[in-house]
Length: 121
Image (cartoon, rainbow, N blue to C red; front, side, top):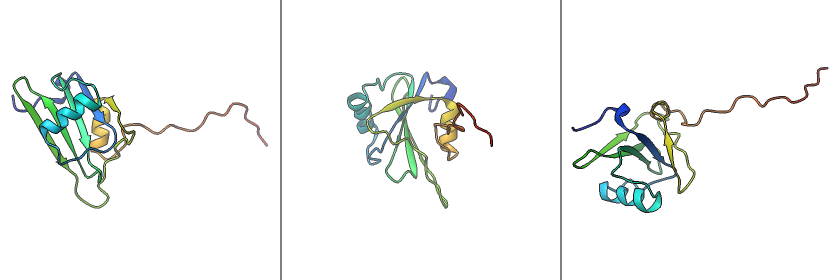
């Protein structure tokens, strides 16, 4: 199989912070293993973003080899809202991945602060 349907993955992981986009499959596998202590051979999709936040790479194991997907965003203001917490890999949902690709953050904004003791004038 060349590419899986997104629903077929057990997990989607996002590598927070910047990744050197010159890295290929072997370099990204080493990042998954050494920095994030995850199993690159699991049924998971791993996402990486470069410093300019104009493109990302997605890596997955497909039973007999790795697949590497590369996506570049063009146009005015095209920039991913990538989480910047260094040295972390977080699990996200399909909806969060869709929000990211659509230009939104994977973490929804918190609404208004609750008022404990309202005072009316």
